[in-house]
Length: 249
Image (cartoon, rainbow, N blue to C red; front, side, top):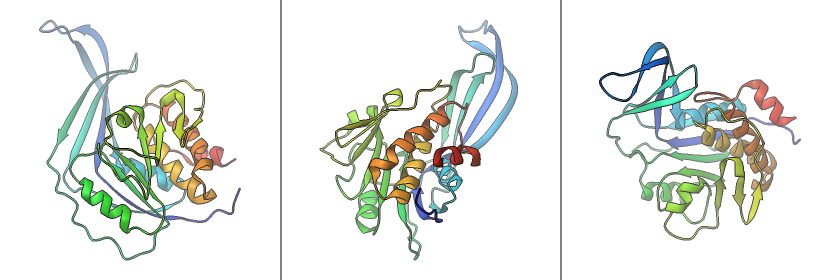
């Protein structure tokens, strides 16, 4: 493996707070045909772009983030006995579009994590991609994206909604692995417990190993392995030091 260095990354995107309310379902609501969740505990973590940031940092990268100040909270209600996801409640404030000035520093890569909540416009994304000197990695839920100048990480559903022709797509397909430039990179076979945040983990590993090896084709298999680790864990998962060491070995 090449000599490791501390890469410095600029991350831009919308972020949220992920809440997990865990309880047990023992009976149905007599007022409506829905389960009653008896509260046990609640866990809170950072989500969306902030989850990407944590996973980038797990590889030892220095991350400068520009994100929204307005709160977004996603609350998931989980039956602990079955690990069944019963309900998700989203509480979203209108986001002010990005007006930050970019820091006057040199970065090894630009990562854009766009959940299409209003922080980044299509025009702003295109400006960022065209202005940045270095590799750009874009994960976006928009239907129109830059057709060149960046790697676009996207899932199959999102690809089907895209408008236009693209030859810079890395299409994640769950158990089907990932497609890039006509080649399929198989996924790691594993038991899936939760897919929340797996795309963020894939993106972070993709960035790190591309910077390490200099070729996206070498980075994608590592990103698949990182995503496989994430889906084996419940909730918004951040790679541990042990996980990262396993990926590097």
